[in-house]
Amino acid sequence: MNIAEVTNAQTAIYFVGHYVGLQNNENRLTSPILKKLFEEHIPSYPHILSALIRSSGRPPSNAWTKQQAIDYFGSVEANLKSAGVEELLLYAVLMRYQKMSEPVTESSMAKAVSRVMLERNCTAAAAAQYLVRHWKRDKDQKGINAQQLLLQYRRYRAKQDKN
Image (cartoon, rainbow, N blue to C red; front, side, top):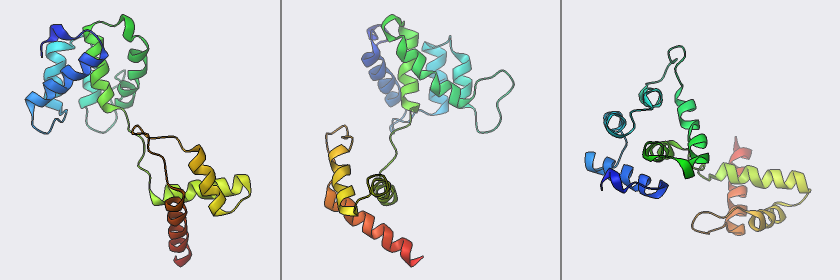
């Protein structure tokens, strides 16, 4: 893919993915690849590059932290309609750093059931049904099964009672 083909956020995301894929087989955005990408296509944002590739520890004074650089995603996203190629590529890079939703674990589901039980003063089964009706759907439009939710709640409670 050619840089001249980058006209919107979707093509920028594709370009960055293609660029990284050509550099390594795992499609991982490593520091050397990030440096090369910024040098070639995003030279106006060296402060973001230095923040993203910096190892842990305190940043130098007046330098951006990694979190500040990642949070800059919001302001780039707000101005996408008027963004140039450089900003579109920066958007695509920062998108890779955005946190994905937390994985749903047995304990998080049990805590959700417990919270609903307290708020609504109901049984675990009623709380599970309530959560099923109000559960935010995943990207693939899958919800959650009330029986599975209740089973996980009971398992978690049994483990807690043993300890």
